[in-house]
Image 1 (cartoon, rainbow, N blue to C red):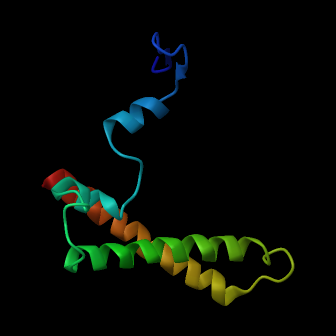
Image 2 (cartoon, rainbow, N blue to C red):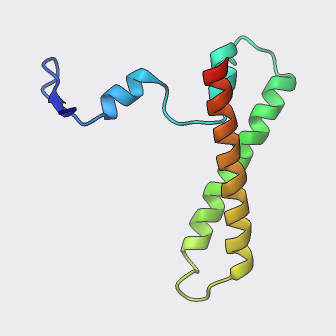
Image 3 (cartoon, one colour):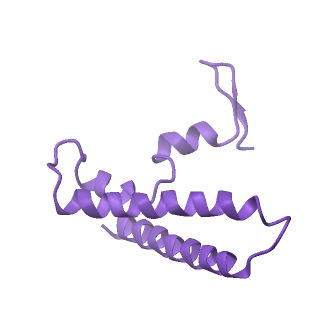
Length: 105
């Protein structure tokens, strides 16, 4: 039902185009700040620093994921997996929080 062909481009829409039009791509870090004000107009202050912190968390998570995938075949390091799981979990909690506050706000 949902899959339709876009007459302007001739591409099949499988939700990807609609999804990006409905709301910005899933970036939990920027979601709350962008809805309030654009970061360009704001001088580097409290909002910016916390923003960068969260971005660092995301970057660290991606690096950890990448690192965890490579050596996993040779030796499974339980500690790093546990750390990764916790990081991902806290990241999910942040996403949930941002998602809910956006809807409620």
